[in-house]
Image 1 (cartoon, rainbow, N blue to C red):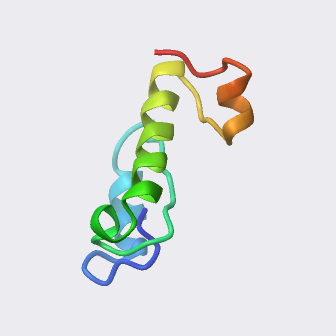
Image 2 (tube, rainbow, N blue to C red):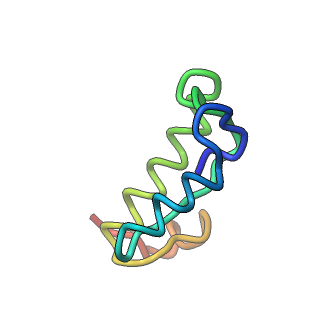
Image 3 (cartoon, one colour):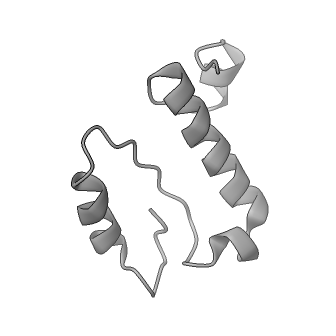
Length: 72
């Protein structure tokens, strides 16, 4: 969810995500163009989301990664 998105509101994004069974949702501090305006922040969120899918659960932070709770 891009919290500061002026194209697709965060509320709308949450409704869309709720329509997807078992969707994992990640908030990111940025707008619709966060992949351009803050590529490092976007890449970190995308990496965490991908790793959570591979591990079958939600990663809450770097400690989960370091502990090996995320595997692909």
